[in-house]
Length: 383
Image 1: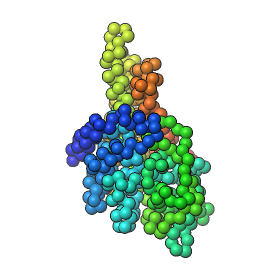
Image 2: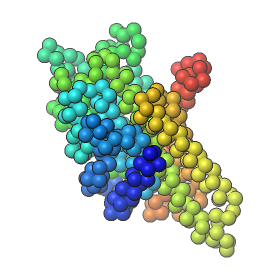
Image 3: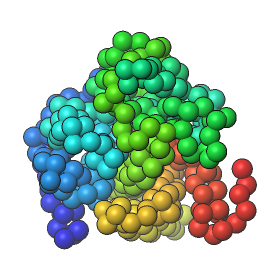
Image 4: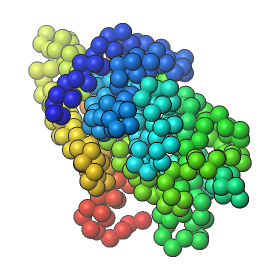
């Protein structure tokens, strides 16, 4: 079933990207414009409906299908970020939302009529999500007042809705640090919500933003799940995010590797193709092996989520392995191309910033190693 699903996704994506290709993606990136035509085509092809259970009007396929889309799109250098953000953000609503929230928010994503960004990271808290200071204070009528600031929020200007993580109980008033967190779904055009772009260039149509919440009013129906018990909702989305990011980086690594292999077959300054020299071929061969190993871990993690099993361990390991493998592949591709790799028209160095960022975001690999050491190996906590 999984093989058939992956093949069907690959065929659909291939048809789309023949028209909306890498050149289109880079043009949109240079102009900082949303690739709306691509997203419309993806929606028409049913790709946005993947990952949503059929009982909610979706096409099914689980996280495995979403990962397959991300990998296939990234293999041709076109990672659709708003698609990835929407796909993992809506998981919290699917799992913990009310039927009304699913009807309003999830079903609208099936046709890309509604898209999401995800607002968790804060300037001071960084990777310590439990230390966030953005607050949502409940009023007598059941609504909430949202105050605070988020940073590195990708695609905030393109998505029309946002999942926001906030404290409904201050950290100094909870017994466990994970208590007192709540998730909310809000309209990105809500009064009091503003944003400013960060000066980050990673050759993608989506930018990163600092987002400000100045007394943003959230209606009662904006709360996802139970107030103060949002940690479970959060990790439902984050585990999916890890897998989606893994597939994304895998595809980009394969994109860079394929370009390097083709170049190594024809580049012959000494008479023979440079691909026959071990100093060139071995890094490429090693990168291939690393990518394939990470790919197995990624789809194993996706299957774990789809089966409703605990997936924190596998999803974190998948993100670690995939991002490291992709980085190695891009590095090998740069070295193979030599000086020409740094000409943007060669389209190798243009891949590197995104791949390098994905070793840091959405969770840096050092924190993932801390997680593995503590949660998987049982070693003493180091932070």
